[in-house]
Image (cartoon, rainbow over all chains, first blue to last red; front, side, top):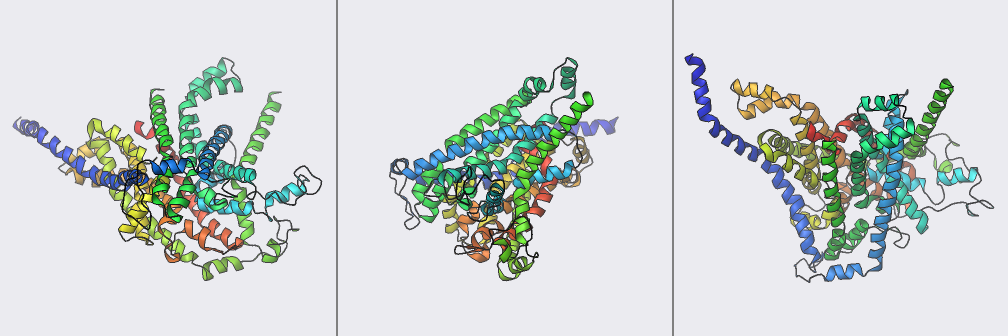
Length: 316
Length: 281
């Protein structure tokens, strides 16, 4: 009796003390990560805002505040306007394509078939490959003289003298404004399709089989199941897939930097690449920071939406 | 009728898959064909570009490894990757444990806040960070990347591990506490071994993300000797306007395929993190 009572008494006496220590330990274990993040994300973010309100350059790093002069100058710059428009066009078009294609691909991949592992690996390649290296591959695919796409088009008589796509031997994908934009959109679609697909596959897997069975018993065909069960149930997770796609496309400069350097004549310039050219290569840190900050409102919007959809998913 | 219908949907399925596989993998096929081509074959516009009109050659791969800084880029990427993995583990495992077990009702909102940091992109931060890096004297050094990369690997890894740790039963570590181990002792004895799959996932994630990163590496490092794969290949393997396509393609494929293989194994767990499903455990 004594033996069991004694530890119990000691425990009840120690509980607040232990809790206190546990709390302290919790803080101590969390703190390094938080400090790191504050120092290397929070602080630079504030610094970006400070820069954007100042006249700082790489040559002259003393910070004198100039109000909203940078934003004013940036907004009235034709290249910036073009970059802003392009960023939105590229993001919206590529993510719309990704949404539709990923939905189809996820449905196809959820079926059983032989060789699934290899198919999955191949389909994932664009996402798992470092984007700079993938983009280099596309640069060569879209080459002005040796593009294999052009070669195939010539072989099927869609390109070349007297054909639909014109008399030239090559389309010069990256040399014409519209085709260059299409190319950038294509590469973004290519890269983000796998991510959206695997997210949607996870969503498909989470739909309980009995709901499908019940619908099948009730005589719902493929399309009816798709539109009345699968899509409504997957709606939150599809939204999350698209939101990630938006963040990764909207803020990317790698694809544009490698494929076109923003050209021809700024026709594919995006906010991120324009911020780089102004801020790092041009040395105008203040204007570069101001340009990059135009990304921020969209990111805040995405974050808010993501929280809303994540919550809805938990309720569902 | 039923049989025919099934056959039809079956071939429809294969047709759909074939189109997607072609779209996803075609650039890699094209890269692999290119890397073995002789100059005379590659640069004859009349040739069928998918065939070897001249015998395949290893000359350009040899050139890549022996006459360019490719090996240095590889080594730099691996060094940065390993250091980033170490820092990420050291910071995110304790943080994730704290959020999962020791922070009570604050754990979840704090975890979500940390996750949201992952959405702040390098393109928003690289300009101020380039000055921070310069003022610390780290410009053109691998240390600049080792310092900055954990700023995006730690948030996602903490989030992922937090979800993982929450899914582990508490009984085992509580038993260890009753057995007289300290909390830290219990973590090392019981939680670490069980969390190994989660830890492996963040090792792979941090390493591949360091390999992938482009913007910081482009902005912080401009000397050839300290470039990583992702920036070195597109900027240094091009002389003026002359692209060495075979070597370039080899450089990309040699890195891309192994990274893709490793990444694929861990993808499902990463997706659990992306879908925010990790909270539910």
